[in-house]
Structures are given as structure tokens and as C-alpha cells.
Amino acid sequence: DFIDACLYLSHLYLFSPQRQVLVVLYQEWFRVSSQKESQADTVRLYLRQVGLTTPTLLPYVVNLTDGNGNMALHYSVSHSNFPVVRLLLDTGLCETDNFNKAGYTPVMLAALTAAESPDDLEVVQQLLKLGDVNSRSRQAGQTALMLAVSHGRVAMVKLLLSCGADVNAQDRERSTALMCASEHGHTHIARLLLETGQCDTSLTDKCFYYIKCRMALSACLTHLLEYATRYYTTKSSGTAMQWLVSGPHTVD
Image 1 (cartoon, helix red, strand yellow):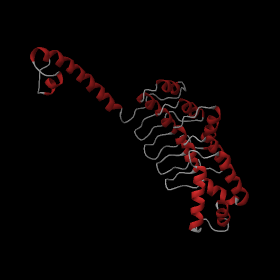
Image 2 (spheres, rainbow, N blue to C red; image 1 turned 90 degrees about the horizontal axis):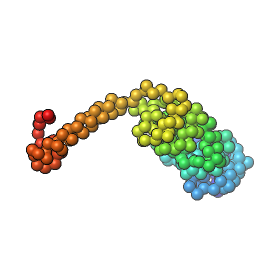
Image 3 (cartoon, rainbow, N blue to C red; image 1 turned 90 degrees about the vertical axis):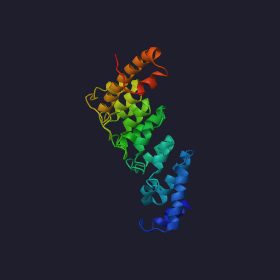
Image 4 (tube, helix red, strand yellow; image 1 turned 180 degrees about the vertical axis):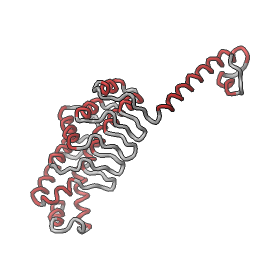
């Protein structure tokens, strides 16, 4: 049915196909290519048959999107199904910088994977070289590097850096990858970023002054609680916090 649908569409304008034919094509392609358990051999067979019978439809099939704006490439990357990712990329037809409706490209999704084996990393590197590693997500404006850093994906951070990821790119909160590493406590990744010699440590984000104020307030409250703890044991009853919020007091 899949090949028959392709043959039928090859004789029509793609902008006005018969609905039922498109439904068959759509359902069958995503069933075969975009499941967690999708098999590379099966996907290879489908790609080969389309290429032989209706080569003009191959770009359309490879880049077909579902209701969420996801292509087979989005799904295979998300599932860490790297053999299928390789097959799709090897067609030379993948639109690697396509955003899904959530605002992410396949490159950004790859940054979240736990690819570690040499074969998997080779496929990811192929994707990174074909796509824009410095593209920003639609909602928060994060780059693939920021996503990898935030999720502690060391191997992906190294790979992104080797493929030209901008360490000083800022998201909509003006945070950088280094700030993300610091925020999440990934000191080993922060060291990797600093070792590039490219980090602009003078950059600040929108939270910079807020954090400094919070730190100052925290220090102040710590001092007051220490005093209250000493005070209420001799002059009051209840807890130190209860004494502290009960009203104005003079601190010696």
C-alpha cells in the first residue's frame, strides 16, 4: 500500500493529492520509521523502494511531519535510534534545522541524548555538521550546548564544542552555557567550557542582580536567626523563628 500510494502521488501535484492516499503514506511512514523499536533494515527497505520507484517523492517522505511538527528524524533522535538516524541523514535530503511545534530541532534533541558509544557519537557528529549547532529553541532561546550542559551530557558537550558551538551564546534570560553549568552544579562541565579559552566571564544574565540580592538577604536572615536563637532561650518562649516574626525587635 505504501509503494502504491507513492506511485499514485508521483502522477499528481503534491499540493492536491487524494486524501486517502496521503493518509496511507503518512501512517505507514511514521509506523515504520518513528517508533522506539523501529528497525533500520525495514527503514532502509522503504527508502530504497521509494528511491527506485518514485525518486521525486523521496524528499517529501523523508521530511514528512506529523501533527506535532516532528519528522522521522526528530523521533529517531529522541529515541536514540541512531542506526535509523544514520539512514535518514545518508539520504542527503533531511531538513536538519526544522523546528517541531515545541520549538526544537533534531540537533537540540540530540544534545539531550546519552550517546556514548563511538558509533552513536559518529552519527550525532554527522547530524551536528549538517545542522545549525547554534540555533536557539523557540521558547527559551536555548542552544543545543545549553541543553546538553543543563542535563549533564558530558560527551555531547565535548562533541558540540568540537563542532563549533558558541560558548557565549545567551538565551532569553541572557544565560550562557557556563551559567547553566554553574546553576546545575556541573563543575566538570564548567571546567570543560573554561578550558576552551573562549568563555566571556564578564557576561551577566537577568538574574545576576536578583541572585546577589538573594545572597545578601540570606546572609542577613542567617545572622538574625542566630541572634534570635540565642535571645529566645533567655528572654522569650517558642521558637527562634516565632520570635523573629512576632514584631519589631532591637538587635544588640
